[in-house]
Amino acid sequence: MKRPKKKKASGFSYNFNGVMENEIKLYFHCKKCCEENKERFQNMREYSSIECGWTEAGFQVWCKRHNCNVVNVGFKGQKVELKG
Image (cartoon, rainbow, N blue to C red; front, side, top):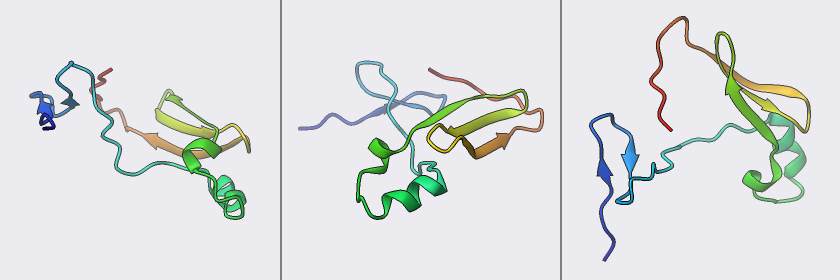
């Protein structure tokens, strides 16, 4: 029988070993990578080559394959809780 996941008060999910769970519902992909990969039918998780990180204004996802921005999220000065 599978053990149910436990939730901490912060709203983040952890398994019973205390390891944070992947809660991603939708992924970011480069539009150019998606178009190129239509013919290959390769898993986008394997095909994509992206970097993610903090900027002065927020958070950015960058495609290394096409050297272009995928998404740039600005937080407009809001404080963000970081877990990891």
